[in-house]
Image (cartoon, rainbow, N blue to C red; front, side, top):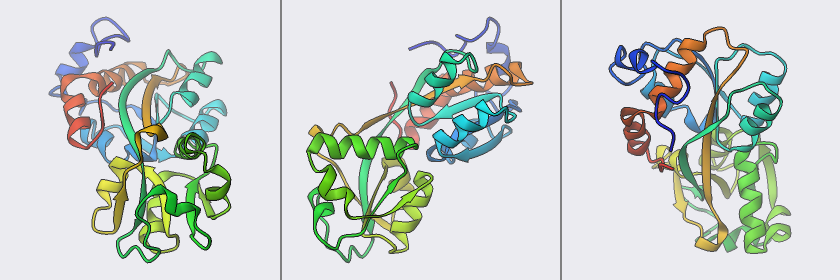
Length: 241
């Protein structure tokens, strides 16, 4: 694991001035929707745009203002890195993909096998979004891709939309990250996936090379990687790499 000041010498001064939480960072941050609760807790003064990692990747490619990119997968940051648009990404958190059902569970789903039953309404993120990539990987690992995907009634733009559709009863089940499922406690039930599903996910962060505030970007990333940032991530249910 790279230390919090891996981006530049002296970045510890930026973090220290903010009480090790990055509160003084005014970075413009594009981040995955699954990070919409925890990142503002780490750096409340940053300016955020949350959404699907794939769409945010495209925004950066098209020159959208951004100092930092935080994604729910290594794929999007690495693609931008290879194009010279961001500095080398670093993993800062892990998560788990889970299946959620509405609190009332009208379809009586008790395991992932229930997503293959005829008549079940399943919602997944689009394939261009990490939560969609991970869901398809899980289905492939379990050998139920065809049976489950034929029940898909909606493909969402990010995990927040998936949670909303399931919580509102518009679908019988959906794949989301554990942290989002926990945040929706009382509105949805969580069904954990078997070990062979390969449900572990990874979150990566990178400084955008074209960002106008490189000092703030470095301070933001340092805050996320700091002991205080890691403690906040863990408190919100994320794993640590």
